[in-house]
Each structure stands twice: as structure tokens, then as C-alpha cells.
Length: 264
Length: 263
Image (cartoon, rainbow over all chains, first blue to last red; front, top):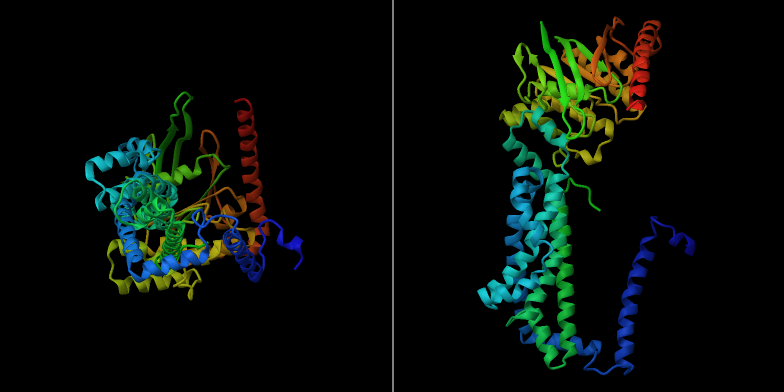
């Protein structure tokens, strides 16, 4: 395979080459990390070597503290995200297709969507404290308004002809909403839930870094105080892997629940 | 007995800061029972608007449309419609798409299945019942859309340039298929197109529309015997009618061009 074939825009490359390039990128990053740490180019309290991170993980798996922190974070993110989604999906679909719903919701969403939730954290701590409820609220506020806007766009893009066609087949307004508008929105809804799930992880860590007594963000912050860069990296990797897993789960869900919609 | 009557229908669009646009001007038209009526006209003449009025998807500024003497108010399963754009429900299989109208009526599942099977067979798609629309070609999707509209047993079938998005070979196949089905059931059809060949090939009568404001310029009965086939397209009668309609449409195109240039 000639190099010039690999560099043609928007054309396929062989699967082994694709995989090879991906592995190369990971190996380069990992190799650089090894070089910096084992080559004594940086101090271990500045950047811990890979084996120290692995050992820290092993130890914290053994005494279950890593699992406890994962559970603390996961329960927060899942609760906040589910609450937001359960409300945002129906409201977003209505907002995109009903002028009245848009008029009611748009002023608030328009304001809230550009407001970083981190700005609200001090207020939330005053009101609710630093426990589970406060972090769930952060996730909720951080994802709900974004979901609302994204899903209302999905709903607004449903073709008018599809709706009109349903009427000529004898559907009444309620049936048009429940049997046509909602199903037509589902692929877009799933894609946007997947995107906002990624944002939810960001807000979770922000909330835990500011104030928390458990969770992965808390673990990272605590490790910083003692210059335990191995534990910091362990926390970062754990979040990365959990994020990757939720993303894969969403892709899988879409394939299983919406087999009729063209997938990427 | 005439089925669809269009009585002195005018549609005017009011746009802020602009002169109101008269899309349809005093249209009078009777769509005869069991006849295949075609409206042909240049783009922008308001023919689609007229069809949407008949479907009840749109209200006229003045005048009245009636089906069997009953004024049309809003859409109904009585008036089935096939759109130019692809309007199959992508989350439903071919069979479920065809059953959609029947399921809204709450017909027993067995009955729904029987009707769907019959309609799918009529459009030649037996074997594709469980396929999803994303796996069908454009022509196949329009066949399903036709089967879905017919499954409801409408009094009239409204077709808005249903083959407009298809390539010319597929379009000819679809026209032949449509005529084939129509010869069997003689459903009342109102068909919109800008393709003169298509209009003459399909219609019992062709209404030629003018643009801006949209008016019916002339209604031409098509006496070419049925069943019609590909040879019809080159027959002397066909050519004679085509020449007449072309002349009518040409005058219109010149006028429309001039009025566009004059602002």
C-alpha cells in the first residue's frame, strides 16, 4: 500500500492499517510517559511512573476504596443524568414542535445554557450542602438545559410532510405526537444523550473537586495534597475508562433499541 | 356523480411589508368520480397548494372545497395522499407502514394483516414485508407509500408529484404500475405534476394551470384508449395533445418570465 493512497481525503484505508495507526498513537503516548519517568527526566512526585499507578490501583482495589469511590461517582452521575433525561426528552420534543412550549421554555433555557454550572456550585452548597443531593443537582442543571436545546432541535427537524402524511392517514393530533413525532425523534435523542453524558462526567468531577467527601474527583483532590501523582493518574484513568464504557453502552443501546435507523 | 368539487377557491398569502401574493385565483374544478384527473402546471403555479387544500392540510382564503357535497374541514382518512418527499415511517417495517392507517382505526390485527398483504402484493413488493424503509430504493418507498394510502380505502387519492424525485426509468415503471392498479379499482385520483408526458399518459383529463396567480387555463379531456402502454407515448393522438399543452405552457412560461423581470 503506497503512502499516497493513505493520504487521499475521505477514502477508506485497510482495517489493519487503521488499527496499526491507532496502536501507534497509544504506544507513542505510553512510550513518552515511560521515557520521562524511567529515564529520570522528571521527579516521581511530578509524574508517577506506570508501575506506581498500577500498584496504587491494585492496592485501592484490594481495600475496596477505589470501588467505593467509583460507586459514589457513578450513583451521582446516573441519578442526575436520568432525572435530567426523563424530563428533557419529552419537554424537548414538545419545545421543538409546539410554539407554545417554545415560548414557555426558551427564555429560561436560553439563559441557563450559557451559564456554567460551576458558577452555581457555591449557591448550591449553601442551599443543599456538599452531599449526594448537591452533586446530583449540579449534574442535573449541567445537562438538563443542554439536552432540552439539543432535543428541541431534533424535534424541529422532523419533516412537516411526515406529520402531514400522518394526518391524511387518519391520525389525530395526539396520535401524531405519540406515534409519529416521538419515534421520529428517537435516533437524534439517543445521539444527544450520548453527547451530554460526556458533559455530565465533566460536571461531576468539577462538583467533586470543589466540595465532596467521596468520589473519584475527591480522590484526585486528596492525592494532590500529598503529591501522590500515582493516585491522581489512577483517578484520571478510571474516569477515562468509565467514560469510554458509558459511551460504548450508548452506542450499543442505539443499535439494539433503534435497529431501523442508519448507524454511523 | 362528481366527488371532489373546488368552488371559487382563492388563496392569498399575506407577508409583512410586501404586497399580498395571490397563489390561487378563483379556481373552479370538478374532479369526476372514478376518473383519473391530472393538474399540470409550471413550478410555483400553486398546484401543490391546491392539493393540500383538498387534503385539508391548508385553508383557503375564500371559496369552498367539498367531497361528495360535504365541505372539507381538516384532513381525514377519506382523502389519502402520496407526497413527493419520502414519508414512510422509518421505524416501521413495510408491513407496519401499510397497516398504519388501519391500526389508527383500531381494526383487528388479522384484518390489518390481510389488507396489508393484499396492498403490498398489488404494488409488487411481496417478500419485502419485514424490510425497513432505509433498505428500500426510492421507487420502492413510493410504492409502499401508495400501498399505505390505498390500504385506508380512501374515497379519493391525492398525489403530489409522487414520482418527481425518481429517475426517468423508475418513473416510467411507476406510472405503468399506477395505471395497472387504477385499471383494477378505478379509484378517483387527483394527480399533480409538472411533467406533460406523465400528465397525458396517466390522465382521463388534464387541467393546465397558469402561474401567478394560479388559475385553470384549460381542461383537456384525453381520449387516448386504455390500457395505455409505452407505445402510447409516441402515438399521433398523444403528440397532438402534447403539442396543445406545450403551447399553453409556453405562453405561460413567457408571461411568468416577463412578470418576474418586471418585478
